[in-house]
Length: 95
Image (tube, rainbow, N blue to C red; front, side):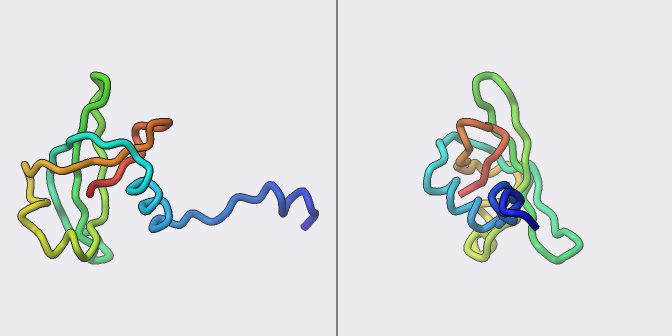
């Protein structure tokens, strides 16, 4: 591998680092939980929607342990706080 390959190589994607960055620097909007389910790996996933500048977004997120400990806050129909990347508004996490 040459020097140029080492410089241009992308870092591996770390979902926890991405989540921490959005929670720290992302803009805030309101969202609504659409549904929750348990995926094939046993992780609880929440599907949610939010609207920015007249555009509706739908996304999903694996719930953290703290979020799983508060099931009422992430039940379908519950209002949640969404943090999103202003440069790419489709990138978001729920608090």
